[in-house]
Length: 257
Image (tube, rainbow, N blue to C red; front, side, top):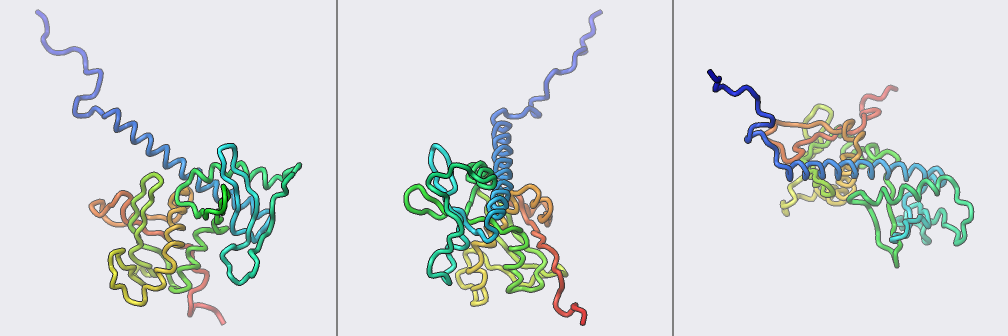
């Protein structure tokens, strides 16, 4: 007598478990784009290191962007420093440079990788020339220093972070002290009635947000400095994040005589 029970198990997942091929493709594209941003962020720091091996005071790179190649033409100390009557030029590429030094060859190879990144501090110059501001030798330390000029005991930033490929949106909510309490609340973008105390934030917002984006895109910095906060119901893409600033060497009042 034949057995009417099935003797073979299904070879594929149940309909409700099947994945949408287009969704899988989009997820793969997102992972690829995020990895590309991570490579660009690390290349940006490596480019700065190679340039500063030749000129330690270098703060910006002048380069030519073309379809054929991207080439570095000059190094500047700080083009926006108005204390200098003449822009502080540190080095300029000779028209017929026969033998390129190692630092320049490495920097030229890294430049196209860097330019794949998002939110780069690039200034348009005449023709195809561009000016690229280099990151600080330590982005996290530079960020901490900028914040602690106004808030010496700042230990972290509490922020909302919406990280999509090439569109990292950052909203800083609080500057946090060592005990986890807020030292300063940053007003909402639409709070036009911000008190005069918010002048510091308006002057420093661009620099702070740019540093946060760079730290998030860099895989090593992300794992080192960011900690998720709050319940999953509060998540907004990457959600609430605490950006832990580098340790304070010595707090006021703790110095030994």
